[in-house]
Image (cartoon, rainbow, N blue to C red; front, side, top):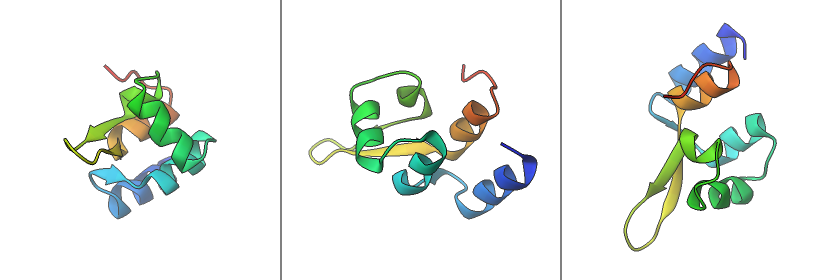
Length: 75
């Protein structure tokens, strides 16, 4: 991922990025991405998490997505 795209994502989505947008960069559908995060599958589970107690929804964190797409460690 180039610096221009990373800066645009950080500006538009400072904390977390919608599944629809993140799925475009990861090459999976939003529904599949949500399921992979919920199942704890790596590397998708490292990029986000399930939020909520009764009705769970998945969230992908912008900083982690950018780091993953740049090949940086997610530790």
